[in-house]
Structure formats: structure tokens, C-alpha cells
Image (cartoon, rainbow, N blue to C red):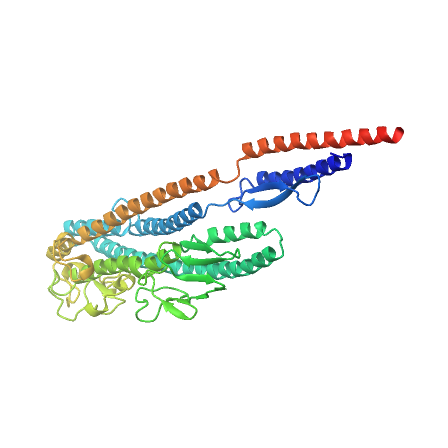
Length: 482
């Protein structure tokens, strides 16, 4: 081999070493970047040189589409589970238990205690007024719980807006990246950085919808929901959604007061269609349109039961059909057909209000014409009995079995606590699964120890090539001195 050939081979080796060192440095620098795909250098003989030499044939971006798909499914499951856990935790706090200060059950217990205290001394105006305060507190607790449920539904509606904005923005970026990647590949340019950006966006979008990604030969990708709904194939779809400023109990999709999701102007029934199931987007729709309304219906059923227990046909003989009892619908007589949202409207009858000058009506009857005997406690005992009496509920939301008013509240609180435990356990399991899949993906990514070993090998190769250059230089210098 001639000296020029040896020098050319060494120089090609130094060039390859420099490129390899740059790739390894980039790998190590991005070791903790989940969207980064590890690069590896493939070398080949340089056929353009008569003496041989080496060249960088290609730089390959390592990726495992199966693990990536599993990771995105796990991310979607974790996001959905987290949404359910947050809702159930909030609902449990709203409903509370008898041990929770300010809960509905605690307020009802306070009313029960006030009635029994008044029974022992029905002549005491102070004790009768205390019953009014307790009854107002119970009605207020129901209203606050209804408002709390409305807040949870409104939050779900707002989370849908966030998901729609993120999906539109992400899919639009993916569409642009597809074009840039295809152009880069066509011109022989490095598109790996663009692919890293693309994977990062896909990971973000998978929190809202579980994604299935298909890579074409040109390097572009098509994106589908896990159930097969096309989201990006050359052109990205466009999501739209009209949020409500505040979600009230009577508002739902059927009456047109709440919006459905639209894709390219076409309404999509979530969760009915099943085409977008699995992520935070579908979870928020389920919370807003199914789970929260079910809780609201149960709360309304309890409010209705309280109104009917203390209304006509109950303990107060002065009440006739069509009269307002202890509790009213915003001051009016409650109508069974207007049950939806009654928990947000329940109020103490104004004639029994704590600021009213006639607390004796607790003892003698709401429609009593004049005060009766101050020692009479039958009505107070009857009202107390209504709280504990087992009877079928008028509301279908409370089921067919009979329960006391206390029993309905205890069951509601118990179910809310159990749902919270289940959903938190499901979230923790989903989190563990996601971490496991993410670790599997990371195992196939950048291993800094291995990269450092590769760097040492390159240093040895660099030293060898540099030594060849030095030897050739010495030989040429010696020839020139002859």
C-alpha cells in the first residue's frame, strides 16, 4: 500500500471516529429524554477509494413500535384512571360521612338531635329555634353537595376543552412533521430529530386517546385511535367542542344543553360509539354525562325523600294535599315530576325559618291557626320518627328497597367511599403498569454505560488512526530529507 493510500485510510477512519463520537455524545446527552431514539452508526468500506478506507454508511434511529404502542396504551389507561380517581375522591369529600364535619349526614344528625332536645322541652322557644337552624343546615348541606357535583361536571367539561385543544394542536404538528420528514429523506438529510419531536407529541396525545401508529415507507405516519378511528392520514382531522360556562343538574346532551364531540363537523357519541375509548377524553365525557348525573340523581332522590317525609301525609296533621311541608322547592310546593336538581333547590319552609317569629309551628303544625299547648310534643316526636322510619322511596334513583333517611345517606356515603377506594386502586395499578412499560422502553434506549464503552473503543480507534498519520508523516519527512 502506498503512503498516500495509508494516509487516506487513516483520514477516513478519523472522520468516521468523529461522526461516531458526535452520535455517542448526543445519545448520552439525551439519555433521560423519553422521546429520544438512540442512534447507532453503521460503517462500510469506502468503494470510492482505490485503497479502501471506511465511511459512515448510515445512522440508524433505534425504536420498538410494539413497546411504543404498549406504552401509549398504558399512558391512556393511566390518564383515564386518574380522572376517575380524582372524581371519586371529590365525590367522597362532597358526600362525606356522619363523622365528617359539615357533611349531609352530620347535618341530618344535628337536626335529629335538635328535634329530640325540643321533645324534652317543647315550651322552649330556644330549642324550637334550634330545630330551625338544624333544618336549614341540612337543606344547605344538600344544596352545597349539589353545587359540588356541578363543579365536578363543569371541571370535566373544561377538561374536554383542554383535551380537544391538545389533540388539534398535536395532530396539526404531526401533519407538518410528516411533510418535513418526507422532504428530509428525499434530500438525504437527517430526519431523526424530527422523529424525536414526533414521538414526543404522540406520547402527549396518547394521554387523551390511545393511539395506534402506522409508519409508511416514506417515513410518514398515519395515526388511528386504538379502536380504528382515523386521526391522521396525510391530513389531520379537526376536533371541535362547545363548552358550557357552568354545568347545572338539568343539563345533558339529550336536551341539547351540553355539547357532543365533533370530528370534522360530525358529531361523535362518546362513550356510545366506542371509537375513542380508553383515554382521558372519553373518561371526562363519561364523568360529565354518566357518572356525575347518576350521583346527582341519587342526591336529588335523597332531597325528594326528605321533602316527602316531612310533607303532607306525614307527621304534621295540619298539612293537606298540595301544601308545602317542612322543606320546599325554592319556597314552592315540590312536584314529583320536577325531581331533577331538587337537591340544589331544597329549602326550609319560610314559616319555620330561624328568623321567623313563630317557632311554635314546629310543635303545633305548619298550618296551625294558633299556638297550642306548650307541653305538646307529639308532632316533634313524629318528625323525629320520620328521619329513622324505613319506607320505600319515591325516587327510582334510591332503588326499590325501603330505607330510612339516615340509611339513604349512609349508603350514599359508603358507596362513595368504596368507589373512591376502587378507583384509587385502579389508578395505582395503571401507574405501576405504565412505569413497567416505560422501563421496558427505556431498557431498549440509551444505556450510558454501553455508550461510554463504545466511546472508549472509538478513542482507541482514533489513536490508531492518528498513529498511522504520524507514521506516514515521519516517513514522508524522512524521504524529503534524502
